[in-house]
Image 1 (cartoon, rainbow, N blue to C red):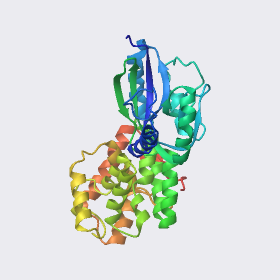
Image 2 (cartoon, rainbow, N blue to C red):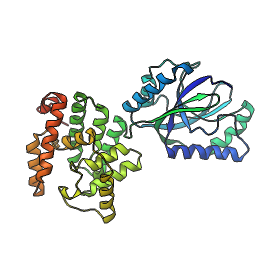
Image 3 (tube, rainbow, N blue to C red):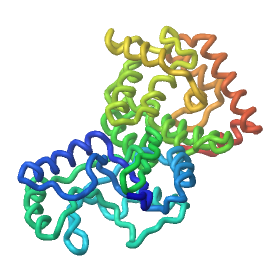
Length: 361
């Protein structure tokens, strides 16, 4: 049988796969199998394309993965399509980030019907679906899912073509929600410090050929470990573990690297209040990281961001030195060099780019 078309799919996270698989297993245990394609991950179809557009869609997937972060969606209901042959679960109508992803697809689709975001549970004849529906109703519950990757397949037979992961960090909206929630758990000036760092990171990234939304989100979340209390080195391991638990590996990485511009835990400024297990986690995770420009960017922004706004870097580091009694000279020099590095990338004065004299969080 010759292949007929391509489909671009937005795959859900592992926890959501388990949730949806559990529902299908309940149906299967009652004798319902369906005629849907087996062995595909649960997904939301983002568009179908003619076979001749394979290379074009693969190239576009890579661009989308660089532009878009993990997308949270709320599955709120189940339904049937016209004719009653397709039983599906669906998110709240047109979740903004998912709709933005759909709109960002520039390759012309071969769609016969208006795009309706949904996740197919079972396909069969209408009578069978009507018998299966009450079982799904009994087991259905609303849940939060995350779109974590895109993959492209050809049909029929099924041929896997390409898979790309979305940036492993939350959307801007979700990052702002996470920070606000964290502040309610442990109020303090660290929240506005984080907003200032995010503002600076976004502005610098935009002038440096980097993803400004990613930079903004990483700036917002670099100190998110402070959600769990007034800790020093502990906020590093807390933030890393928290972001990893949510599947935001890129944000977790920044929770580590923002405090160590030389990857040397001994030069941490503050109290060493971690357990042996937490200290080992930080050391081992740092050792596995090769710093990139996002690590460097947030380190720089951390060194110029106060709770009241953007600070002169020397003034900011002096303030930290006065509060903690010391500031390692190598770390100090590394921060100064980071400022020079990004000014060269931008071809502009850093304080002008971040609007030092006017920005307030």
